[in-house]
Length: 178
Ligand SMILES: Nc1nc2c(ncn2[C@@H]2O[C@H](COP(=O)(O)OP(=O)(O)OP(=O)(O)O)[C@@H](O)[C@H]2O)c(=O)[nH]1
Ligand SMILES: [Zn+2]
Image (cartoon, rainbow, N blue to C red):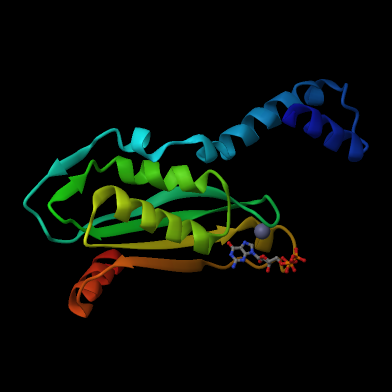
């Protein structure tokens, strides 16, 4: 279905869909787009794959500057940047690689940066049973750079979930900002 839509799009550009360079483009573009939104079909439990380990640790764990690529739901154009995830474990830690996998699961959908940040925080919180989770994202939006306002800038978003003291909250934020 996407392949047909891309072919129609090329025709709408008045392109020659039979020229060599474009012959396979609808198929290629459809495959690429399917991958870019493949996060809709992911199951968080399969992603975590039981990689939760009992550890006597209640100190902050931070995985910083995870690269991510997403598509804004308003223009279907990329926004991308880094995501930092910090949490305070509650008897269990999660396999480190699972955090970037969770980031990808929610990034590979049509998103707004604020909701993406919140969804990652909620997912990590639920899956780890952590005392608290803080997610900070920093992104550049193609829809603001290539068109529209045509400005390059950085957008920061933050989402916190949990119930901890203000001191612990500050420690979490300090670790992420360090
Ligand atoms: N809050 C938020 N806004 C976003 C995000 N991605 C894109 N937008 C904004 O969504 C808005 C859509 O505004 P509209 O006026 O409906 O669309 P538009 O005419 O294309 O707007 P311009 O981009 O200003 O040209 C724009 O201000 C975008 O910058 C995001 O992740 N978060
Ligand atoms: Zn946009």
